[in-house]
Amino acid sequence: MVKKNGLFFWRWLQSPKTVGAVVPSSEALAAAMARAVPLADGYVIELGGGTGVITQALLNRGVDPKKLIVIERDPTFYNLLIKRFPNLAIINGNATDLTKLVASAAGIRQASAIVSGLPLIGMPKPVQHKIMDECKALMGTQSPFVQFTYSLFSPLNRQEFSLTGQRLERIFNNIPPASVWQYYKK
Image 1 (cartoon, rainbow, N blue to C red):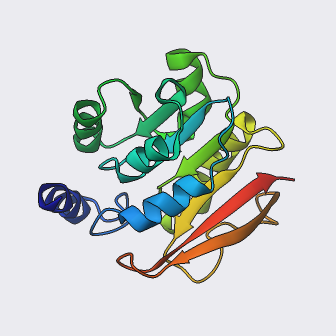
Image 2: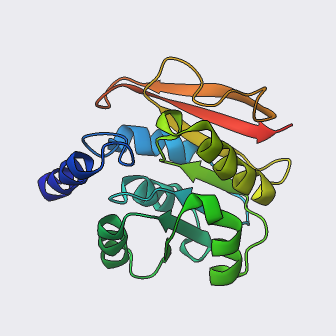
Image 3: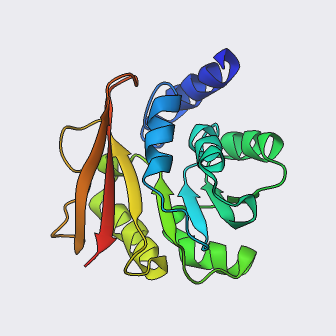
């Protein structure tokens, strides 16, 4: 755990705008994210796998390892993930190219859920829109988009992104405290 925290902190020092925190998500936050994912037969896509805390929580929740796809842009975290989870589909790529990445790597055209560990709230609006357009292209009407935030408010403007959504949980034993939000396409 100390080694992963050190790696995470080091990556944050190198790129604070793309690594959204100084330490990985806590197991409590990861478990709350996983609880927001329905156990359906479809694919679950995780954006920003980082050190794999949320990935492990999704597996613990019962997500089928054959139907879990993890997208990680950072090469250091990508290499950590493929070593930690050698039997999962880990894709080195950017969430702005999500539909192309999952179609070419796994033939996926729809997801039963998308779980995001990306620091969306700190990204420029055009990047947020590109990522959400890509996610919405893969979401069915019953497919949630699950996102956490350190903000007290929704990390996504629901009207601007044509989403419905609500805060599900507030996790106080995370550094810093975080909230889990679940969104659906309108």
